[in-house]
Amino acid sequence: MQRIVAFVVAVAALAAFAVAAGKSYTITLFSPAVVGATELKPGDYTVKMVDANTIMIDGKAETRSTVKVETVKDKFAKTSIRVVDSDGKQHVQEIRLGGTNTKLVLGEPSTNAGN
Image (cartoon, rainbow, N blue to C red):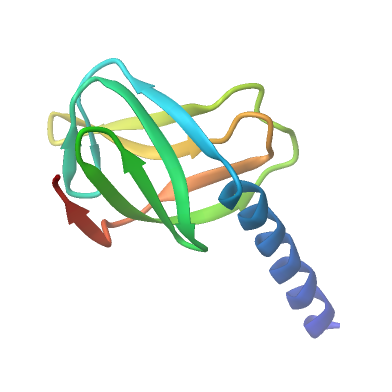
């Protein structure tokens, strides 16, 4: 029974990743916000899945961060972010992908590249 439950959870996670990996999503920051170790300026950014647990946020410089892909019951009407205040700065905690029931919970950065 435990194997069946583990299999179902694994399939659900892969399905959520497949939905997220095929598209890019746009987020807008209205104030400076930290993603991983990088502080992003206000503006529009494109979010893309790199692999099953890494996103890339494209702006003037590329920022990568590890994420945990979670599936929720209801679809999100639009792409949005959830930020939390910490150390006097806003940190992006979640990205909710519009038109899907997938949310990306951000972790520590995996790579930072500035070009």
